[in-house]
Length: 295
Image (cartoon, rainbow, N blue to C red; front, top):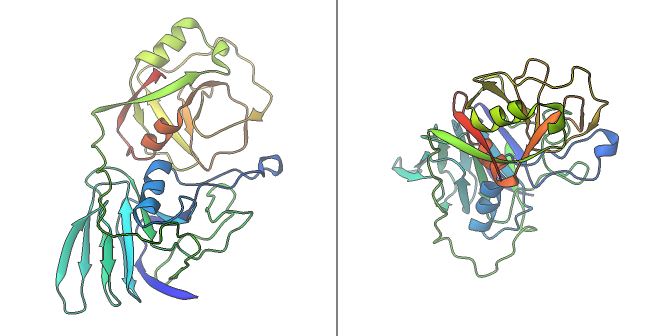
């Protein structure tokens, strides 16, 4: 086992994720996986890994590790400063989305993002993480998967995820664009939009919502300008749910299901986000304004 880093400070939350855990919904186990899948895939591609390689999803920066050996590492997803303290005491400054070639003893710190919420850390060759039910993803709802990282944890490497033999570190990832003052998220209506009046559906697509602080990987709560009213007063029998489902509970405040969502739900789903919109949602901080639009 090849030790690459040890964790000095994990920040608010640092968890292993990959493309997700599939095939177990019938037993009540969801998929989990990276919230912003595009950024996670780009991080792996930047260091010559398969996109299925585990990455570390880091919430709001504040993440610091010390290298035990020479390796290539990258952080993607947010726009944030990275500092590398060399053994000689020299401090080098970089930004996310730039491949870093670090040496043993270097201290790498991902600082608070200027924009974006979740950064993804990938290392050339991939992290060596024991899969559970076929995935290295941590699921906050079920507690399945490797535990969130803590200070002192050792991060080991593997070469099983390499896809490029003639890889070069001279790569720059596309810089993430700052979110617009009002972020538009594309949706497909249904399957339960018939539980709402035509006026309510129109209101859903025209009004602005604020991302609630009471949000996480399980679900992102939206604070509406005008609560959404149902056409029917009853409740649905529980039915299957997917990432990006927008449920409307009785209070009319929509909840968008994240990657750690429950596999079933009983509130009507007015619409479902596209995959690209789910990725962008994972980078929007509390208080950000969003509007839904038909894909």
